[in-house]
Image (cartoon, rainbow, N blue to C red; front, side, top):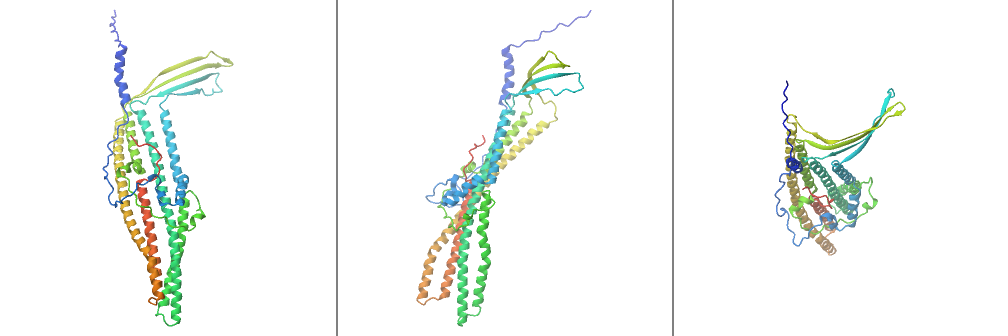
Length: 472
């Protein structure tokens, strides 16, 4: 006789107890998220070093700093470059692509529905099925997977926006630099033409004196050598404005320059000194720093996703299938099948692969934080060096400007002495050449100071930002 072991009744948990047992799992799934990135604090000085403080200096407008030069043609070129530059346009397209990708990532975690039909039956079959169905799925993205993916997509959008800002900052600075070089090239060409005219006058005077027997031996040869030197310099100086105009055309996305750019125009006046923004503001104005900051956020998101891979992945799915057998010309009674339930993928044994991925992404996050700190240090050093170079260039320009204001008076005194017979034509020629040489130095100093100012604003990240927020 066989005796059956009495079955122990399975305990039934009260509904409240079942919910209490599931609560920790649900809480863990909800709380697991992107890990907060390590500290990114980099000590910055309270004020910039290496630059003289200008009393009464106004705060600069970083969004439109080039307007301080007071040249409407430069303003128009900068506006056109921001709208037409091909590099900026490419960066904008990449930003829009990142935004669309972020939208796609958000929609990945909402319920979706699809329809399907069975493929055509084999012609050799005696019966076939007419089948149509609907499939629904909902990926829940628990244990931080959803938040990690969304944070990763947001970091890509922020990095793309920083790339747009970096492209615009670079283009604005290049347009301003090229425009200053263009006007300086035109000024140098005009001065060289004056020097050539003076050299021709010197040669003519030396020949007259030689004909009268009043010229020293070799004076004609010396004057002729000076004229040939000026003639040799002329082609390069004449080509410089054309080269700068072509560079402007490239920055504006054109194949050839506008002829009006080559019309002679005075060199932009150097703007008055402006106070540099505080070093702490560099963190939100310099695109390279914001780009490195978004790289930290991206690395933190990837670490969160790697951690989520250690846990089961849960999604909900369902399907509704309607099928009917077709036997010859007869359509049999249709049937429908409904299925609904969770789908769970749980890691069991991967020999430490997922753990190694977590460790690797942790190191990548540390590397991104290090790169961010290096970007802050590099940016601060570039601004400080630029401010020091600007102060030196401005001091040199102001000294030469003071000499240039006195040059016409010195030249006038030489002319009066010549009228009184106390100076000859050679003395007047020397004074005229000295005035032109001084003007050459003044132009070089003025454009050097202008270029140093452009470099400072570029280091500060001067240009209107795209408006994307900073990483959390």
